[in-house]
Amino acid sequence: MKLLKFVLSGAALALSLAGAVAAQDKTKVGFVYVGPINDGGWNQHHHDSALEMKAHFGDKVELVYQESVPEGADAERVLTQMALGGAKLIFTTSFGYMDPTINVAKKFPNVKFEHATGYKTTDNVSVYSARFYEGRAIQGHIAGSMTKSNIIGYIASYPIPEVIRGINSAYLHAKRVNPDVQFKIIWLFSWFDPAKEADATTTLLEQGADVVLQHTDSTAPLATMAKAGKGIGFGQAADMAEYAPSPRVSSIIDLWAPYYIARTQAVMDGTWTSVNTWDGIKAGMVGIGEISSVVPADVKASAEAMKAAIAAGTYHPFTGPINKQDGSVWLKDGEVADDGTLAGMGFYIEGIVGDIPK
Image 1 (spheres, rainbow, N blue to C red):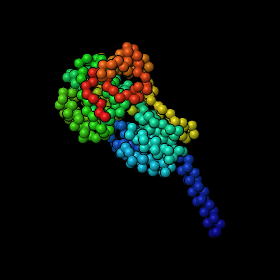
Image 2: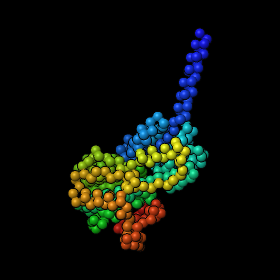
Image 3: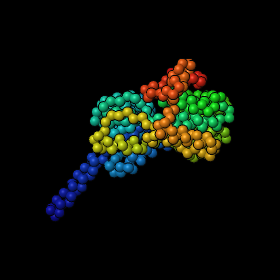
Image 4: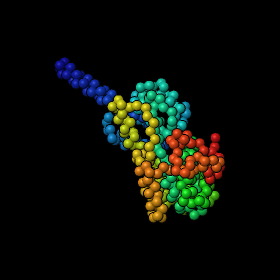
């Protein structure tokens, strides 16, 4: 009997040790989201990509996440908890997480951090973003071609370079196909606030806009236009195809999964290094949702031709001649904007009315 107990005890110990080794073999990967994971846009698409990454690696990866984390002290607390909980790689998926990410990374030099849309890096902090302005160019082309009122509304989140680039790109390409186009811009100072987004959409429609673009995360603008029975818009960060063929006539889709898989693999392999990644349509980080049947065939064809040219590297959305808002020359004829200027863009181009909030 004693021998049997000893054998059983040894077997239990072996199973326990095997379980501990299996747990240690797993790479814990964390994600922090500024909004809910069911927002239908930015946060949901990041989370869906995180789930794709988890599915790719199976039992080799443990996925942890926290949604609706405010930018600031709360973010530092959540990141610290994740690091203390054994996360080896943490993705922080909003611009306002930049300083919290840097601060926490200093305390955990053996943890790797990946910050979306920021610009500060250290030995254990990478940054990554997508060239959304490429998609905005295509949206602007469609919007400028389809507006009947010549008034295009734009719901903007925060006055940071990423958002300003998008406004400029959309306006530039709307203006090139329709010189009479005007942009009306409403700043919300929020990434995700369905009520404010709906109110802004209503205001823009009342001001005569028949196209509304958005750089906010919810489906509220499309839902508002659908309820009003007027206006067209575009999916933001996700396809938002439930509103197709109208008011959603196309979309910008963020394709993060390949990046998440590659960076997680690098941590597992021990080959991770700090990088600054800024990819677009060509690399497959920016997708353009199907252009719906509401869009005239010739407009659809020219929009798809622009997408193909951007992917081929034969066309850059910020190609001169382009002046700044004050009329001074920014890019001469045929000159292409450099990444440094685009990354820090803090000015409107000529023709946009209004000031950028401080």
